[in-house]
Image (tube, rainbow, N blue to C red; front, top):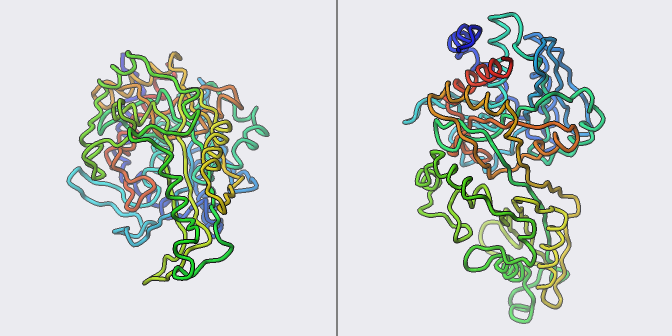
Length: 461
C-alpha cells in the first residue's frame, strides 16, 4: 500500500527542482579542496554553508572543529527510527586545469545528448549526492512540518585527503553519533537508470617510495653507461609488480582474498551492467585486469596494485641531459575479503627492497593510511525496504552490487560505533569523478531526491 504521506512530498520535490539545483550550485562554487592548505578557508566556508542550510530547515546544526577541517553535525527533533546520514563536502584538486572546458568552480547547467547535466568539481562526488538527501528532508519538512524519522547528519571535510580527523572525532563523540543505521550517499549505480545498493566495498592501501642512486644529478655523457639511473631502476621494479596475466606478482599478495559465490556472480551478471558502455566511455576496447575474471569481478571482487604517479629527472621544456639522483612512485592497492592493509604494506615494501640494485637505496613515506574491505549486513530489513522504494522510483528492480571504490567510513561505523551502514548512490560511471569536467546528471540528482523521500517513508513504516 502506498504511503499517503508520500505523494505531496514527491510533488514538492518536482516543483522545487530548480531551487534545489540553485542551492547545489551555491555549494559547488565553494572551492573546498581538502588536500591543499591554501583552501582551508574555503573548506571552512563549505562547512558553514551546510550548517546554515540545515539550520534553515529546522536542524540543530553546528560546525565542530578538528585539527584539520571542520565536521558538520546536525540533529533533528523528530521521532521514529534513528538514521545518521554521512557525506563529505570536500573535493579533489582540479588539476590538470587546462583540460577543463568550463571553470571547475563556476558550475554550469549544460545540455548533452543524454539530457541536462550540472558541470563542476564536486557535482557528483560528493556535494551533489549529499544534497539529494538534504533536499528530500527539505521537501518532507515543507509539506508535513516534520520528518518521518529521527535524522542526524555527520559530514566531514577530509574524505578526499585520507580523513585523518575522522576516527578520533568519532571516538570522542560516539554516544552523540550512534543511531540505528548509517546512510551513505557516495557511490554509483551499476548502469544508468539502475538503482543500486552496495553490498561490499574494496579496502585501500596507499604508499609512496623514492629510489636514490647518485648523490646528485649526473651529466649523462660523463656517467651514461656506468651510472645507475634511478628512473630505469624504478621502471624495472614497477614492471615486476605484475605477471603477464595481470596477476599481482608480490609474494603473499593474495593472502586473505576470498572467491565470490556462483550465486553472487549470477546476481551481478543480471544487474544491468553494460560492459561495452563502461569500457568505451573512457576509450577502452577491452578489460586489462587479471585474466580469468569478468570485468565486474575485476572491479568489485579482485585486489589490485596500481601505480598512480611516477616522476623524476628533468620535466621542463626542451631537454636536459642528466641522470637524475632520484625517482619517485606513488601506488595504491584495492583490498578485498580479509586482506590486512598493514601486512600487505610489509609485503609490497619487501618486494621492492629485494629487487634493488647495488648503489640504489629506497625510502618510504611513513604517513600513509590503509583500510580493510567492508561487507554490508544486507540481511537487515532496512535493505529490503530501501530496495522496494528504489524499485518503485526508478521503475526497475533495484540491485545489490559490489563497489570497486573504497569508502572507509562504512567500516568505521561498524568498528567505532557498532553501527551497520547502507550505501546508496546515484552517480554514473561517466561522471568524471576526480577528473576534469566532472558532472552530475540532472535526472540522477532529481530522482536521487525522490528516492530518499521514498526510502525515508519506507523506513518509518
